[in-house]
Image 1 (tube, rainbow, N blue to C red):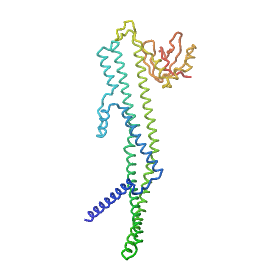
Image 2 (cartoon, rainbow, N blue to C red; image 1 turned 120 degrees about the vertical axis):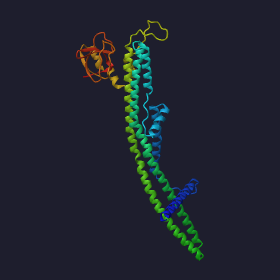
Image 3 (tube, one colour; image 1 turned 30 degrees about the vertical axis):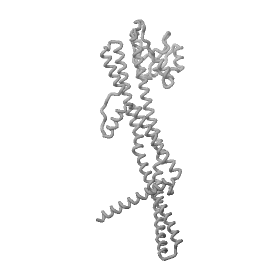
Image 4 (cartoon, one colour; image 1 turned 180 degrees about the vertical axis):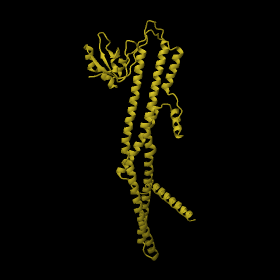
Length: 387
């Protein structure tokens, strides 16, 4: 019975508090009640938190679109994530294209020029698809997850404490309003102090004033305490920015790795396609004597040199010019793996050191390389001369 009485009293008190806040909020909107303003520092922190939340959501959503352009696939991944289940593995677009090319090449015949080219292109597309998966996985772990944790964790806590601060402010302003009304009523009762009943009214309103003053002190203390809690949470936004900066660097590094891999894959593919016999026929009824022109890797490197410093340095280094003008040899470190297109070339492995030299009449984009008893032509774009 006592527990029931307590619950009824608590319910009535909560209802009274809610009604008081609603009245205060409505009067503030109508301009009929004064409102306690937050200090400028706290307002700036609140504004910074809202701005951070807004742009974090936009960046996170657009990054998801960048990594997975298919909206249906994003919805499916979201559903599986909420169900705490692993999404079924499917081929991505480069892998699917690569598989189609390989199947078509096998259908046309691996021994034919077109069939062989399709198979090589398909294998490269599959490698790009694998790199794409690695980019998505790395970006999700190192970039998207921290952003999502902020939105669903830290900012929700800030929102909760901010709502409590708003309620404490409404309680404080409602108490101030009641105190103001009690003082006005007390003053009016004092002016009408002509009989005994009026003296009783003065005592009643004096007690009401005292009670209201005590309520204002309590609500002011609670408001100040909640404002301090909210301020401490909001000041953590600067740490959030620092953490997101580190995550952004990880995302950029993941993209850099991905695009470097794709560039290298396509460079190798172009070299393989460029090594095919030049007797292929085009599909435009050209004469059989017209060869299909291929673009060598150095021309691609020249156009991309601005964005790849390591390749640029290997191209413009004065050491190569000196080597070509002399009859001596130099040691060189191999930058990338290279598969020889024919018997006159030398296959290379990344990071190995070989001996290189120039011979009269050799193409400007090539050097002779030696590794033990093996020797052959090597592209200078794959080398870094050592001192």
